Length: 261
Image 1 (cartoon, rainbow, N blue to C red):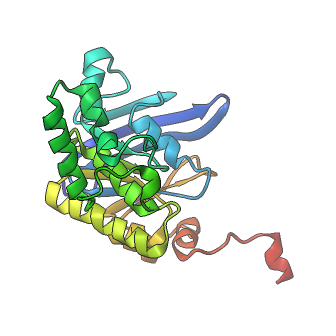
Image 2 (cartoon, one colour):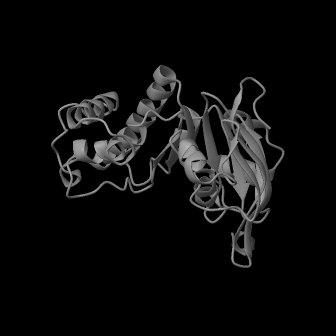
């Protein structure tokens, strides 16, 4: 279910994911509303990144459907599939920048692959995206010459270069110190507000969740599915599920060690 306040741009219906005989999650359904920052939460091994990879078309679900702008990415082939994929941009957890290429060359790469624009136009567009993430002046730097936070911002610029309607970010704050992570959160919020892009963010970083997410779902490995959905503050303060409260309060699960305390 969506928030009820907007038009769903993504709809996931009764989706099941498996690796061989192992079911990661079963019968997952939710909507992402146009223009919102939507977070996918949960502990290690619950299937957060697996869900994202299904939503961007890297994996095919064992069952269910994924609709993007009313088109079924699980069934689309050929030109129809490419048309859907052009509507999305992806920032992978590592950033996935090519070390031998400058930031400008990294960002313009999708333009080279998917458009027939003149080289000068590609350079202008790539430079404009780097400005959007406050990397003006770093166009000729190599990834090894910039900080971890700058690499993440460059990866977001590359994800935006084809002007997608949806940006998927996989653990954008992973490996960053708290200050750099907060700066990245500010970048995401600013892009959301100024460009109206829909963000789907996989994360387990509590400060980021509360700073940027309008709404979230929480996956659980034991439940093989969604155990909570709503605004992060509401989930923290009002969820009836102890697993959800423990996640937001950073509390360990009760176990045998507690008896020795």
